[in-house]
Length: 131
Image (cartoon, rainbow, N blue to C red; front, top):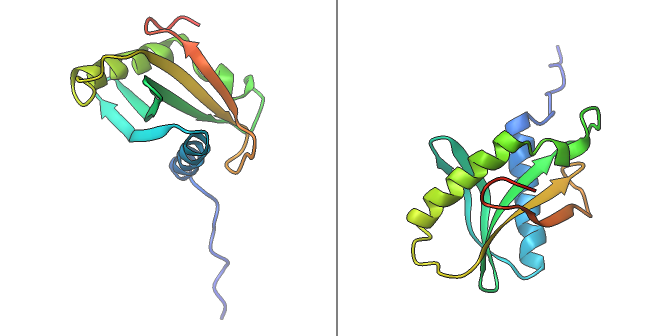
């Protein structure tokens, strides 16, 4: 009696981890130094924290293969931007307390897990969550 084939479909968290790994590799290849991944605080999470020269960069990684609701960029809503800003303030009060240079919020948008050309939106929004 043979066993049914094992389901190898990735779960949403599994896809998210792969997308974040891809994003970290993409940014590292472009000269950024990754400082942290999945920095969580009550009310928010930073997917990646990186240095781009003297600039501290908070990176939101979005993966959305279906365009039904506008693609990955549409999923970074005002509420999401506010949660990212909250998490960034926590980072700057904690692990990043010594940082005195500029900061920015970037988004890295992937259309699929193995997207060879993700869209990198530098300065995607400000600390108040405005585009």
